[in-house]
Amino acid sequence: MEEGVMTNINAVMDPELTELVAGDLGVDIDFVQAETLEDKLLTAMDELEDDEASLKPRAPVVTFLGHVDHGKTSLIDKLIGIDVASGEDGGITQHIRAYQIENDGRPISFVDTPGHEAFTEMRARGAGVTDIVVLVVAADDGVMPQTEEAISHAKAADVPIIVALNKIDLPGVDPTRALQDLAANDLLPSEWGGEVEVVKTSATTGEGLEELLETILTVAELNEFKANPDRPAIGSCLESQQDADKGVVTKVLVQKGTLRVGDTVVCGEAYGKVKAMTDPLRPSRRLLEAGPSVPVNLTGLNRAPSAGEPLYVIDDIAAAREIADTRAHAERAEFLGSTGFQAATLENLFDRLDGVGDIQTLNLILRADVRGSIEALEKELTKLEHPEVRLRILQKSVGGVTEGDVLLADASEAVIIAFNVVPDDKARAKADQLGVEIRRYGIIYKVADDLKLALEGMLRPEQ
Ligand code: GDP
Image (cartoon, rainbow, N blue to C red; front, side, top):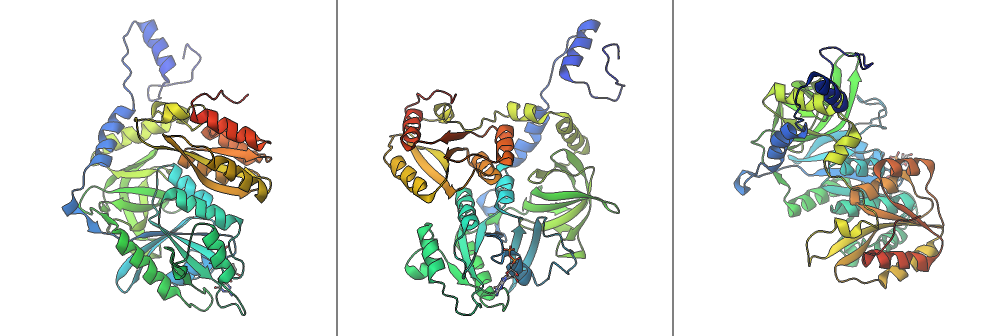
């Protein structure tokens, strides 16, 4: 308090002040990294090897992405058999929905994010919860800009894509153009000899929905999604909010192990004992336990964790509290710093490459004023070759740099090339916050030159 800080015996002091006071008192201080305990417990959990024999098949976790109004919400509503607008969940389409349904006794989990930005933001925070993306494309409209973005996001996540060619009931609709659009985006439909399953659907008549579910289950079987249900649970917070009656309600997708009522958990800056769990699809149905791929709404956390935070079961409540509280007090910047987080920039390209002899990838996101510029850029870039670094264009689109681009860049360690376009305010702010590099150009050969220099490890920071 002599230092001008309003504090008391229960307050947490920052390290500088602690050092100062300790110096005054002649006490030696040894700072122990908060992450030590966290490391010990959580890394151990992450690394807990699940041997092959312990792995059991689990439900695929499916996310729907697509251009606005192509029928994403209607399809999911129809599949889960509720009309969300008037159903139990009452008009919360802004939020992430997560439901598990069964088709012939075989479970499928849906995680419905409001848009591909949310999908990628979750991935950026380490919550790669999605196993399969269903790309919804309206047959009358074809592939639109947001469809292309969704394709990039799904590809960057490296998950199988199934296309739902929706609104097939519309009179006179000809799906050929949509199929051509898909093929032009590297999604060659299986009916044309490619590898992408395209299911013709109508959310209005229900046509093709059974086939869509079957296709999802077939893709799931091919991929053999498995997890060990017999271990302390790890999950992911999808969203969390303060409810006037129930306290903090957190939507969690269990990823490994089995979560049980009474378990002590830590999730981001929150901790607590799981008081109750309910099925998000039938809120009146209480669950005592939830295994891999099962979404639940749970109560018992002391505060609302952020979406994307991993949830861990820890049998020691004191440790859970300590981890959560330490995180709550730690500056996010400090946290990022201490975990060695480094955003991708062209200059640090070579610092980020590890290992010798491996082929490394430099991810790029291209934004340009017109489609012609993109084509010209791509042509230039294909001319660049390097024995150890491969250029990979994650996304290319016309228009200014958006927040979604920045999130994708952050999640994929990509650099954004903005050609004759500027980022909007939100994109700029997000890029500053995340340290994502947006390089602006107006001349094609300048882009190629800079990338060449970057590949040769000689690029100077942009002025
Ligand atoms: P979202 O923005 O992708 O979630 O699209 P919505 O599910 O909100 O659907 C947008 C509009 O298209 C709504 O008016 C729906 O009724 C309509 N719609 C969705 N699916 C179909 C379909 O299969 N056939 C027809 N005719 N209309 C559909």
